[in-house]
Image (cartoon, rainbow, N blue to C red; front, side, top):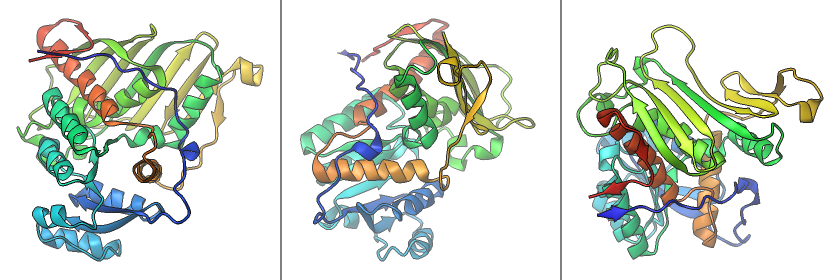
Amino acid sequence: MLTRRQATVPGPIPVHCTRLPRADSPPLRVALVGMGRIGRVHLQALSAVKEAQVVGVYDLNTELARERAEAASVKRVFASWQELLKDPEVQCVGILLPHDLHEQYVSEALDAGKHVVCEKPLAPTLPECDRMLAAAARAGKKLLPVHNRVYSLGVEKMSELLRQDAIGEVFLAQTTGFEAPPTVQTWLATPRGGGGVLMSQAVHPMYVLRWLLGDVTRVSCLFGDRKVVDMTAEDHAVVLLKFANGVAGEMTCTFGIAHGPLDHSIAFHARDGYLELSRKGLQIIAPRMYSDTELHEIPLVETDSTFGFTHLWEDYSRGILNEAPTRQTAEDGMRAVEIVQAAYRSNATGQTINLPLETH
């Protein structure tokens, strides 16, 4: 039986304050595996990262891989996974595959001496996460999760405002994830084990809340019985969280919105104000800042939808090249999965689940 200990969550590390590589340092040589929709996003993001260079891509669909590589001016398409692993030019592998394939590809890349950046969630289950972290430790290489939203300008600004005590002591956090059925990828609608809306969508605000508020100690969850999306796992859920610092959290998520607002939001209610990030932007009520109780908009300028991915790759590339701390770690990836798994247990048993979890 393995008993998990709660991690100590450090204060936010501004990405622009991480240590830069020396001027004479060559870029991190990256190969990407998986050229679906998210593969195209990573290629676009990496094109703006001077600390990294995509040296090749791989996908079982060779035609798709060639199409993506040509569009991104990437010179090489690997003929096989083994060819990629044996290539000494590749320093880091980006695993952009369905969830149930993460452990295999991550572990094999680590065993081959490569650093790994793995799409969220790190893996569908905690035993898989444990084995992946152990593989990284054996190899002496970094394993880093794609937690792109902690690198968005909106979340960075929320972190800054909370650290400045702009709205006072937070007592309640709320998140929403309202998406339509077309969001569900083909493989996610099958019994492959990738999870449902919690693992695929709500894991984003879970890792964001944990970065901003610290560890979660209790989880309660329920699914509704009126399923509206043709997929194996849950298409909507409500999750309650209690944080170690006493903050209560509530998360509502769904893939089933037919009509109405498609949105993602994170809101904090505090003793002296209110802060919300949504598709409308970042809004705040903060008498300490504005000497009134009006709702104010804080301007955010992100160049495009890949902004968070770009700054994630900047941070991770610097961290690998300089052996420096990064804003997120494999431990953070595992903790996000732990919260999802606690939610699944709660829905199945009707009980509130305490963290850390015990696994057998």
